Amino acid sequence: MRSEVMNFFKLKQTFEHLGYFETPENTQLIENLKQDIHQGGLIIVSGIVGSGKTTLLVHVQKELQLAGQVIVSRSLSVDKEKISLGTLMTALFYDLSTKSGVKLPTQPEKRERQLLALIKKSRKPIALFVDDAHSLQTKTLVGLKRLIELVYQDGNILSVVLAGHPKLKNDLKRPVLEEIGARIRSALMLEGIKNYQQDYIKWALTEATQKEVDWQELITEEALNFLAEKLATPLQVKQYLKQAFEQAYEVGQKLITIDVVETVLVKSLNDLEPQLVRYGYSVKILSQLLQVKPGEVRSFLNGQLSANQTQEMMDKILMAGIPLSS
Image (cartoon, rainbow, N blue to C red; front, side, top):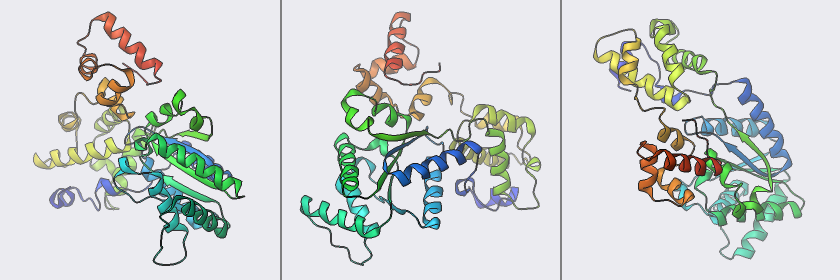
């Protein structure tokens, strides 16, 4: 957000850098997650795009590090689609080693043995966090499952927390991934700010503005309620609050009204295609999963198929376990 806009509305920080918003449901999810981590195994945390998975994981990691009972490890690789078992084992080596200048074994057998020795030496449960895990290849998931088993056989505890779109949870239910899906310790669903949209918007405005500014000085209750009705995730709220402030600044308004909000809000925000994308299903992924041409998927999403074809496509999508609300 531009500095002149922030000064105009007395904002002390941008909406992109807000902290952690707590709800009773998220608090319970975190408690369940921490308990599962102490037991070891494969743990799934799924949530739609923008629901706050990364923010929640960072919060959990800080709590675990502060408690000091679990060693936290995470991969810093930014190319998620190319993350392999080797990449994740490298992360474990770096986070478990107490020496500087870690030398990684190049031979697989030697690598596994040295990693098991490091885990045993740590004398604590290990939690490996993998964000955007929906991008992991099947062989990487199988390798992680095997690594967890090796650590367990050696008398130690390794938890692998996979966070990703709901597509990840659905994929692990498929018959081809049965050996992984059947070994999941828990599958947790992050609801984000569901049923708390109004509270979140008020919190976001309070966090972003200077102490002497009340949120009611910035936005009408009608506009706030309209945003709460249309938006579903923290990411959406941050995006459209930013745009609303910028739009109000351009027209010289100190108060965001429903007219300003309607100007910036995308009309197709909650159409079927963006809803499916939030669950991790793009046109390309849908065409591969349903074994139909991408053009046919686009025609379905645009309402261009016949009634019979539309029903057939909807049946295929529902059978694949994909949520369909319209």
